[in-house]
Length: 210
Image (spheres, rainbow, N blue to C red):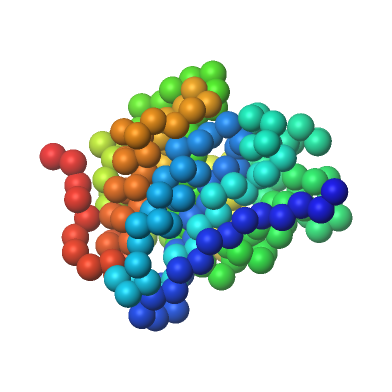
């Protein structure tokens, strides 16, 4: 079976900065996926300075099965980055996602929620001790969620590989229960626009909570 990772790209007045947003690493976390699709419909290239790359469903087999993990090999995709070109299905997907799409980013937004068995109080993670901690923390605050937390990301997470490669990154957690709700999508959409404002990709200042 041939597998493909869908990618949406908008290039505005300039090619840089390049923001890469990845959702659907876990197949039952839907808020980031649906938020990306709505932002795609709303954004106009003329209002954008830079390149926005969106990956709504990074793990198509897991998404089709409605599962956190890929049913083909039962691996957690967010624990196998940077992947392997000769590994299992999940390892190959992770390899191409990182090397072909993510590696050229100036910033990475890894969009998560809790899986089908739980609902999370929205928060955003940034790396604790890293050369890109300062830039990641500033972006985490600009994203606009009430709670921000530093993490020692485990080896194999997409954001951990990004920070080791010198790419600032954050990982919000919004939603859960294997579904998507308008109010939770709205948080993700506002956060994404806030991040683009922070990076100078959109005009204006981030809309932060009180």
